[in-house]
Image 1 (cartoon, rainbow, N blue to C red):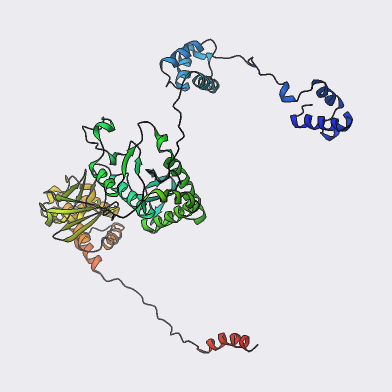
Image 2: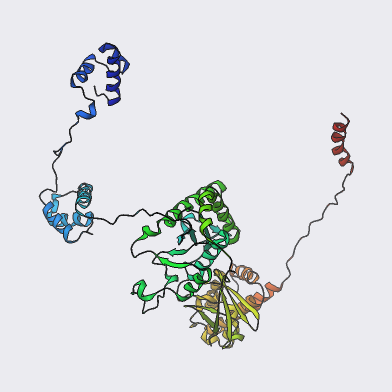
Length: 504
């Protein structure tokens, strides 16, 4: 029978107290008196009797080839076990079976542990009020929806490493504008300013990353001038982690994971991942951050005591550019393009860039508010801005560079395909463009409903037919309402119990 250290210790205790071997065995739940006798004679507990095993219990299938495998690992330590196993199988034929891959993986893992040095994470001593770490963390895995639409987003997350106090803002990219929004919101919420603002070394928004600077070191290319101006405004020192050293930003990285887990739990309790707006979703996140910060107030007080109070006014949460509208009616903001009303062709307009939208201003009037595009070489083409030009130059419709954007809904494309089936090409284009003009002048939904109805019929139709349907007044049946008579005596019944209570 196998016994444990605890059982043997109990046996020895019982024997010291004068119990017989049989009594000690019963007390320790040991079946045989001989077991008690054995450990009395040995004077050791079971764990002390175990000897380390120095022999293999089964043959090593890779023993014959291990020297060659080890040589390859020394020459190229990044080689993976699966690649080496496939190489062996190709060379040795049927000598090795697929189920032996796991054995080779253990061999190589042990070899790396014994023969390769690795970069260790160095635990840091954090000084209160010294550093604010900022990082962008992707939240797409939470599957948030805004008005039933998938909402892809990032949270610019800032953390004080000493107290773990945190704050953040919802953004769509890790751009300089997003970092400005996140940093300023954090400082305003905190009310104080630390000494240093630290980001990771891959944050493109904080570096000059032109074509001639992408391969330069941080010391060579320096910080983005606008970013340095922002930090100087608040009296902050810029700092980044060293290359390939994410552990230096470990506090905010760890907090990213904890924050997302907390959001996931609150979403489960909420029972829905749907929000009416970005503002509503952000309010939900603010509540979670407030709860997480509630237990950090003692250490936060130590940080605040050595920080400078926030006295300066924040920068606007937008950038303003002066841009000339091209002859094609497109203004370019960064590497992306947006159409604007054709009257602005060739004019210089002011563009106010916010995190989620841009505003186009001309002659001190806001002309357009458009969703802000991220990335490069994307275009926001509004058919309403170009429809007049297309009607005057219908021959350019089919080869128009942004032809696909001329079909705002699937019903419009189906309508154009149907028109092409029974009208000459130029006539079909003209009819469709007139229909698109109706959508631009009125309600796009009304034209969509008219097209859907016409597509369900087998008759021929044109833009005049669509116009008649759109202008036709809807026949609504207004139900007769029964007049409601209010019996005021029911209020006396509500007062009776209160009167009775007062009398008693």
